[in-house]
Length: 281
Ligand SMILES: [Zn+2]
Image (cartoon, rainbow, N blue to C red):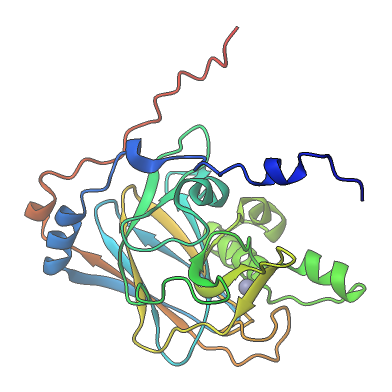
């Protein structure tokens, strides 16, 4: 391939961060840390292996997703409980925080809202960092495993327990609507506990065995009233393959906790986005 004479010079230009987060409204982590000292459990939902379940979290409460029986990855959708059109925006969360998220970072909602839906307040896998392959945990790059990509790559194979289908069935059951009606609400997920990255040589999306072990959990503070939908991925720990029943799979536990009200006296719920929505003249 013909290269321009200044190809090296063009490649040598230093990158700049697309979205410097210094001006992003910062979560009050000391407030959250104080609040989580006073938690009382409100309820729990068990997500069976290769299935999904919905759960509700009041604004100002915490929820935890825990590994309980074996290494297991979860695919998480979040909605504004009162308006399903406001939902988790994986792509913009990635643009703001990077490919993987952990304590102190947030799950942002779709346009025109673009406000924090949940803040991560504790991550027992926070020690993992970025490994020698460029892999890390809790990614916002992998969309969700789905039967359409599986059919595309397998010459028409039919598999019904990909996270996309699990989330569709679960949401349909929760809303009391058909799967056809529920499916368009399913969106790109937070891949809880999944260990992923991009290969340096080809830039391809990779996964590897999750470092999660029973007892590990990821904890969130609900900034608005949430409807959650969590799938226990058929990939199990995602060490080999998904979109099949071959991997060892385990349930995931979702628990909801309320802090003492006094600890949230100075908490400021997220406000509407300040863009005027006129889009100019
Ligand atoms: Zn999956």
